[in-house]
Image (cartoon, rainbow, N blue to C red; front, side, top):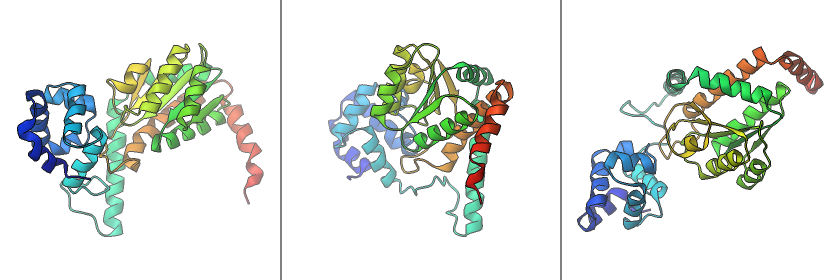
Length: 278
């Protein structure tokens, strides 16, 4: 993959004024660009989404994601986000790093989450005859965890990680049912498409995401905000997942405490697998 910054330097004199504004922002804030979506960069540079895509392609990249990967390589980022701190070497130092970032993600999510929205989402899920959960990659793993937790409460919940199955499931939803989309970036196309289909079917739509504007948020009736941002090289990090898991546990606990059949369902699901342990 070519160098993003070298490609930019080589093409800079040939860029239009709109593309040059993007180039200037990238050159002055390359570390910030790693955490931006197309729309974020367009807004920061005073340009448009289409101009950002054209900028990346004019530099020889297939799109914005490939450009960001090349930029991450230029900045010599490690697979974990270290910032300005020294690289941890001993196991104790690495443990301290992981714990600290997990704690930061939880604290940030606590500040971002709107309890009214979470409470409303819990009410919708508890009353729904069916709840679908959509997620891709690491967010798909979280979706499966959601489905498992809701099943223990006696709810009809199913997670879909395959985009084709998600799309087919979404169009079969009906009013009164709920679709939950999980995407840290908020711009995962397959998840957004599934939620859009669910909304057209009349289902209530809930998004769990770090991005509360555009993308997945536009397709949702309720947005539950999480943290933390990731670089392109750090996808699926524990820190990013902590925010999702916090919202999951909050939803689970709200339903468990208020759903009239929750305690019975938890006892029955625990009993049916009790003989699977030594």
